[in-house]
Amino acid sequence: LQHAFLWWGKLYLGDNHVIVHFENNVGSALDSAFEHGFSRAYFVWWNQPIEWYGITVPGGFVKLCDFGRISVYVFGG
Image 1 (cartoon, rainbow, N blue to C red):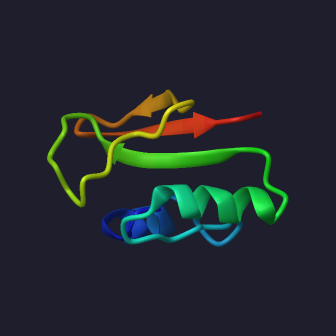
Image 2: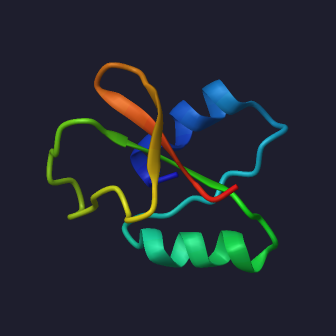
C-alpha cells in the first residue's frame, strides 16, 4: 500500500494480511512481494487522477472493488 493508504489497509484488512508498504516506488514494492513468493498483489488508489507522487495504477492490474473515490485493483492469480 502506498503510504497514504497504510492506515486504510490496516483498518480494512486486519492482521491476517501482509501489507507491502511503499512511499512512491510501486514497482519495487511489487518486486518485493513477488520475490517473497506471493502470486497475487492488490493495489489501492484513487479513481480520479490526483497527481500524488506521480503514481498511477500499474499495468496489468484490474479493478476489483470500487469504494467511490478509491478502488482496489488486483494483479495475478
